[in-house]
Length: 76
Image (cartoon, rainbow, N blue to C red; front, side):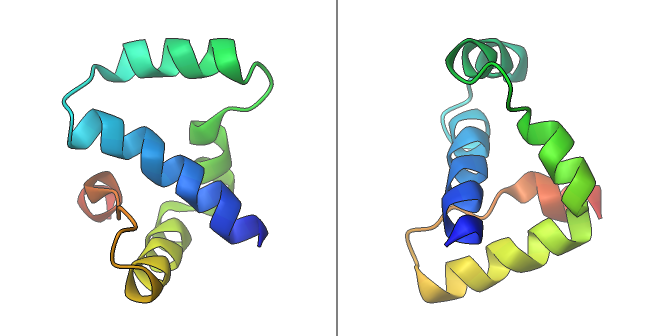
């Protein structure tokens, strides 16, 4: 349940940037205003890009509407 909630949030954040071409800094600023104590990039860094990519891949296999951020593949 925690993975599903967290990674849907991560997915949405990067979908806005990658698919809808919003600026990363603007998205981060808005996210910081909405969720003051939660930093998605720090969470991703703590989990690790490789594991984040695997989790997203698994979620995409279960739900074709899940957005698998392209940035994870590029970072590897």
